[in-house]
Structures are given as C-alpha cells and as structure tokens.
Image (tube, rainbow, N blue to C red; front, side, top):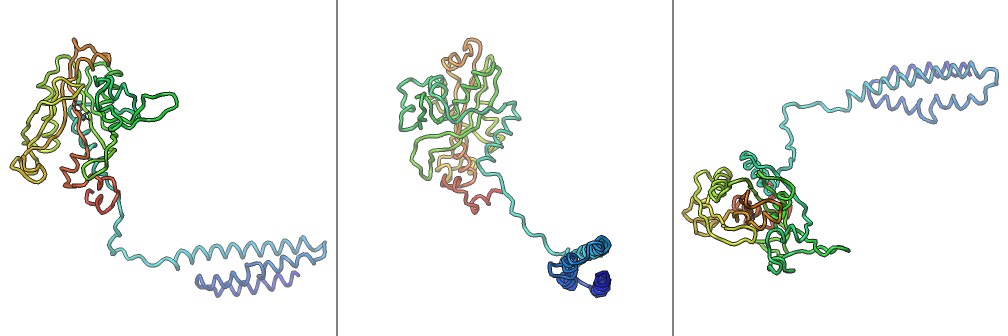
Length: 339
Ligand code: DAH
C-alpha cells in the first residue's frame, strides 16, 4: 500500500507539472480529486490494510491528500483570476444607469415647502382618515352644509363610530394644528385629499392640496395678501400681478380667491389661461372667529389667515400636462420628461 501511495504521488506530481491553464487544471481535478479519482480510491482501499499498518499508511495518505488539495487550491485561484476575466477596455463609454426621479407632484410639494420654509413656516401633517368634527364641524360648516353630502365625501365604516371619513380637504389639519399649538402659528400642511367625484381628464377622486395657516396678534388682510403674493412671485413668476376676488368659505371671513397673471403669456392671453390672462392660484381668507374659538384660540386676542390650493392643477399648468390621469398612470414615458 505504501508503494501504491508513493507511485500515486509520482504520477500526481508529473500531472501537476503539465497543468498550465484552467482547462488542464480541471482535467487534473477529474483524474485525481473526484470520488472515483486516484486519491479517493486509495482512501477506499485503506479498509483492506491490516490493522497494525493502518496508522502509518493512513498518515502517509493523509499528508499526500492534504498537499495535493493545497496545491490545487493555489492553482485554481491563480487561473481563475487571470484566465476567465476578459481584458477591460477602459476607453468604452459608460452604460447609462437608469435613475429614478422625483415625481412632478412631489417636486411641486417640495418646492412649495422650500419657499414657505424660507418665509419662516413650519410643516404639519394630519391623518387621511378624519372625523366629521375636524373636517367640517370645527371649520364652521353648518350641520346641513352640502359638502357633507354622501355625493362628495367618502365615509368610513367603523363598527362603533359613524363620524369617520376620508378628509375632503387639508383644512382639517389647520384644526389639528390650532388645537395642538399656541400662537404664533406659521404652518403649511401638504397632503392627500379624497372626494367622491367621477374620474375625468380634469378631476380624480384622490388628489393633493397644500394648506397654509398664519395666526398671531394683529394679523391683517394686508399680511395675507403680501404673504401669498411673496410666495407666488418666488414660486412662479417674479413679476406677476394679482387679482383678489371675494368668495365664500365657511371657515374664513372675509374669503377671497386669488388670481395671478398667467406666467406663460404674462397676462396677454393663451391656451393655458383660456385667453383670460389670469390663473386662479388659491382660496384664502381671514380665519373665522368661530373657528378660532372652536379650536381653543381667543379671537379677541388673535387673528390670522388661511389659504389652500390643489397641487395637481398647478403641476398641470406648469408642465402642460392636460390630463390629470397621466400623473397617476406611472407611465415612464411621461415621468421621464421630468428629471
Ligand atoms: N379647503 C378649501 C377647498 O378644499 C380650500 C381653502 C380655501 C383652504 C380657503 C383655505 C382657505 O384654508 O382659507 O376648496
């Protein structure tokens, strides 16, 4: 047996000498290192060696096996490193990496936050699933106000509450902010809102709004106008003109709607502004004293203004996208246009 081991060692040594690349190394492995190969066959035959010789023979065989395996590993590392890797051509142009981009709706919200932050506003958020009191009651909606109607509001079924709904506007967050904070309050509140509306090119049942709130001592209509004008000039058009139209919201008195000269045609009239020269940018007003009282703020001491606008509409004006559904289809051909 010792002679066979010595003979195998010689044969292996001579085969090793002719290993020059990965292919010849593989041939070497198939001859000597597999189950029916030279080494394992010797190990199997160890069984028939007389008991008293086993330790010597076993030791000899083990040391041969160990040294062959070590050398095989070293060669394998060497060949794999050099032979299978194609040579690099450093002059080739890089492959384009497909990167994601911020969705135009998120970009619009981010930019609005940036502009209002620069004016000292904080950001607040509230729950999408609201109760009647935050969405309507404390905003001075009369109990029979049509906005509470099943037609507009998605109500949420809950086993022991009948007042839950999906918020229909971000004004609900105003209420939460006033309940939680003491004036001075300067806050903007972006978020998703829900209305039971038929889906069309102009409207969806789910969209985004950004709400603003400013409460302090002695806040006036002039503060409201100048804040909104400063925002719109920073955000859209530094030389914009404005128009303030009286309006009605239950939670503000007086209420206004604000138009800005069209930033595409500078007020001359174009397709986007429907040849009027004006774009409606938001609803606003002085927070109604009833609202302040219901939210725990004394209207004798404090006053303030609020405003709110829809994000999708502004994104559509600014991008020229004329079907709101394109913003939600996740079609990369559309989204790629807004890197
Ligand atoms: N909540 C109103 C809406 O959904 C928008 C709005 C108008 C918000 C006037 C305000 C505001 O804060 O003062 O149409």
